[in-house]
Length: 50
Image (tube, rainbow, N blue to C red; front, side, top):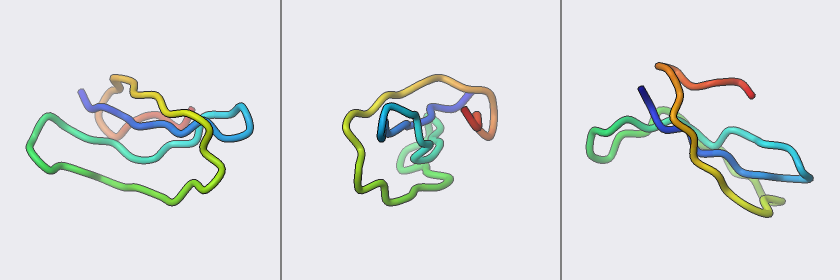
């Protein structure tokens, strides 16, 4: 399982990357300038599109 970070922008979730329990792990990230909130979910390997 991996943790997936989401930014909520204009009322819609936008993926900001997936992370494992390993120290300093990160599979991707992006710049989301209009983020109004953030959420973290627990997802299967490689995360979720929505």
